Amino acid sequence: MAADEWAAGPFPDAASPFRRVRARLRAARAGAGGAALGVFSLRIAAAGCAYLAQVLMARMMGGEEYGIFATVWVWIAILGHTATLGLAQGACRFLPVERARGQLDAVRGFLVGGALASAAGGLCLALAGLAIAEIQHDVLDGLYGGPILVAVVVVPLFAFQDYLEGVARSQGWPMLAIAPPYLLRQGLIMAGMIGAVLFGAPAHAWVAIACTLVATGVSATVQGAVLLARLRRHLPAGPRTYRWRIWLTACLPIAAGELATSAFGFVDVVLLGFLAPPASVGLYFAATRIQQFVVFVAYAASAATAPRFAAARAEGDEAGLAALVRMQARWTFLGTVVVGLGVIAAAPLLLGLFGSDFHDSLPVLAILVAGGVTASLFGPGEDILIMLGGERLCVAITLAMLALAVLLCLVLIPWLGIVGAALAMAGATALRGLAMAAGARAVHGIATPAFARAAPSPGRKGAA
Image 1 (tube, rainbow, N blue to C red):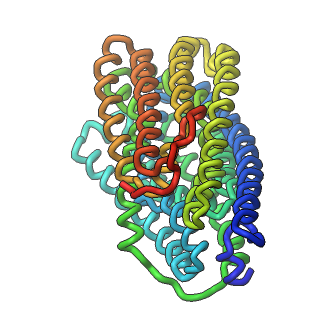
Image 2: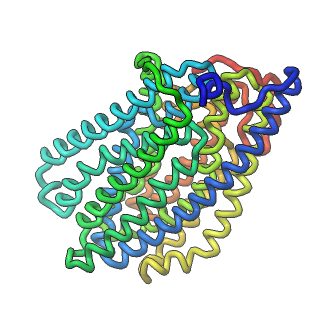
Image 3: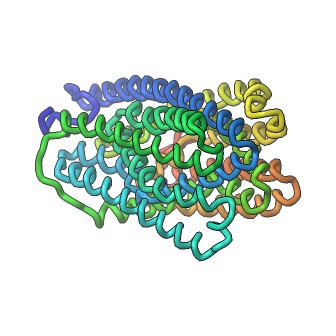
């Protein structure tokens, strides 16, 4: 593909501005809807694979070892998502814009620089975490010691694959973004654990983390090779420009937001790890794995539409941008409701596969699903703030909600146990969605709630 074709953007030109807007709007709706459906289908398949993997591990390891595995896995996810320095999300923001402007040297520079920075960031964070654990001698000497040592190697690979996912999403290749980390990796973890135990390895948490290491390495290699081959076909060779000051000015706040978002998503499990025995952590973590079926609706919509928000703004297509937001918000909410009801109906069976003790997680699952459905009602406020400018406000909102979640967990967990953790997270999640919607309207004049009336002046405003 020639350079001018790469830079032309995803929408066809038309003979007049009016026809051009209509053509873009039709293409955006069709493309976003089809992509979102495909992404959602793949994520459901991936969630099923992940669910089977968690059931397998819970059955094989037992409650205590499964709880240890869950706690260490949560820390891998938090550090891995943060280690990209915001460049994984930044790819969805900068690459479509640089492409639309025809600045292909900056595209090439971002692709290479981001990959190196993500892997290096993962290694630095993993070593820092190991140093902290070493200071706390009882941590490495206890039940968590072996899994933590293996996790140090997993984190850089996880961070690198997280960056690859962001790049694939930025190019409109959601299947390539999602299938390797969420389907292939989970399948390899499951196969690896079965194989390890069959060959005589103990069904312990450190073995499960070792299987995660191998699976992450293999899936990241496959994803990177396919992504590189596609980029070479579509992006002409040429010089690279590194605009680190511009990129990091925007991406470091996004990285802080990634840390806050990851911490927000896992703070309940982390605090349970300190306040409850590993078996209780396992019960709670099982419910969160099933609840992911509900969360994937919003993820699928975001993967398909978030880069389109940035491209539409860069091309001045405010009408198309507003229409995309309305479409995404309404379909995401309706899809979340349908999937949420289905999950609750199937919950006794889904939890029972983990073991008879896991039926105690049913109230936890119901509460978490209710929180997710309520949050989806407020639409893609977070995507708007990250993609169009306003990442600092996004970080501030997430940090505030994280502090609220921590406070609620510290109050409710000692009183109500795992149900208290679920209540804390459901409330904080719903309030976060409301705050993001308010921020998107204040900064960009865009009404994101599913059934909100359009803002009176939906043109672009200044970024926070």
